[in-house]
Length: 186
Image (cartoon, rainbow, N blue to C red; front, side):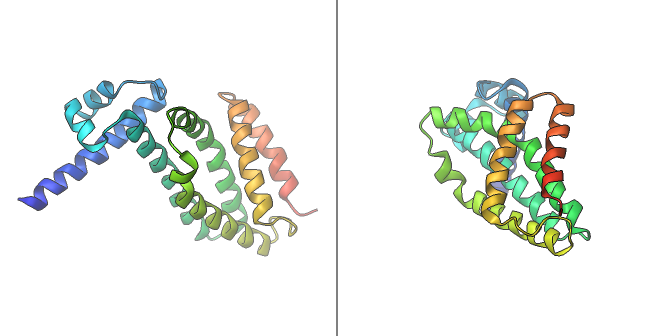
């Protein structure tokens, strides 16, 4: 029975995280935990058994999103064509950045040390990004004078670009196009 209870608890946690992400993405990080519980089909007590505070739920969603980006970057490191894989990685970062920033700001305002919580995932993301960069450079798709530090600076810039362009996908695409053009060999 214990394994069944653990499996049920794990499924509840996964369902809560998935629904919390949907609720917070649709309604913003200020959405209620009661709405998360309702959409997940569980009682509010179940939410708080898994996540003692709303901030812990927001942090779990934030980290899950970051881990998903790391997973996507990992997949891209095994792509057959390294140039498009690298640029797909940048596109993925841009698409994720707006939502991630909203979670980050709410968590930071509530006293969560977001940098410390996200440090392992960000280290994995940097490693995957550097692998993608090196592969793209070896294939001649990215100029050779870009290193890991420049890539990290560009990733921060991409995040800010995503925030600025907001809900204007055409502006976001044009801006990303300018960046991509600057990364190509001369």
